[in-house]
Image (cartoon, rainbow, N blue to C red; front, side, top):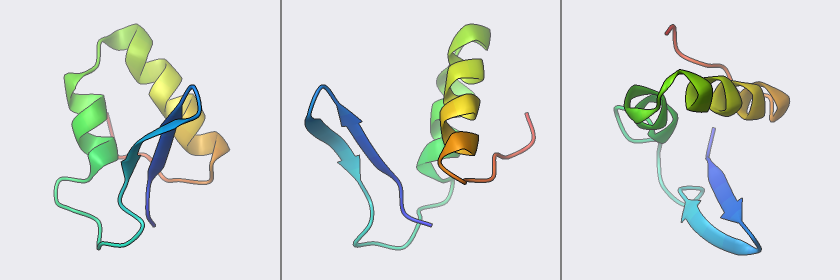
Length: 55
C-alpha cells in the first residue's frame, strides 16, 4: 500500500508510483522515532488503514 505524507499542504513523501521499499517508509519512521513520536505515527497509520510492524 503506498504512503503519502502531507505536511501543511506540502507533499513531503509520496511513494504511490513505486513499490514499497524494504524496509518500508513506515518501518523507517518507527525505527527512528522516540516513544511519543511512535505513538503518533502508529495512530495515524492505523487511522489510514495501514498495518504497523511489530514494535
